[in-house]
Image 1 (cartoon, rainbow, N blue to C red):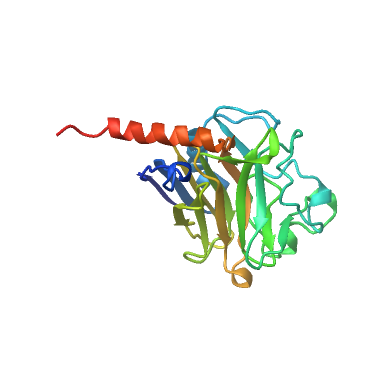
Image 2: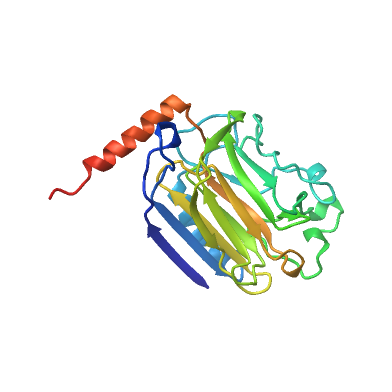
Length: 269
């Protein structure tokens, strides 16, 4: 098992609303790979603690904490062999109110969830070799390609874009180095972080999560393997409570406050 934790820092600048570009924040990376769920559990739990307590999947706003998608709330009607709608968990009804959407990019044409044994359909997308589960028994995969975006929305208002403090994903069957990556973007499409998911053995498990000390993540672009050469699927998605993006006037005030705070912390000569 490989496990590393990296605290780093990113530079804070004015937002575009006041004449400059990115927001910024300190980041904390949690990553691990291992043969089974037990081997990555401690790192996943540490990432959960970084984000805060679990919020219920209700259309209610919270000042902090986290939400999760483990696919259990998805019915057979949106599971293999049926397509999975990327906006399923961006709804203002329980238990779908998570504030997260999955959007196809590149050659990806849509998404699919694996079926359950009780459904009578072939499980694990019909693959003979099988995958390892973190939280049985559904898994998620893009179809037609290997790339997609994750975007955040206000859980109480699905039409309102939101920012999150971070995202972590459980992957299974990452075998090739640098084949699977996550790139984090802020609201102005500036890259906050790009990182490869740790590779492991066949059907093994990997986890990569990055959290920030402020809600600055607007989307995360994921590359999940090398298409036909490397089938990578995903289990749990864990993310900071989505918070609605402030109106431009409010955003300007927040950015000016951030810059003022930085100036106040300058070391005396």
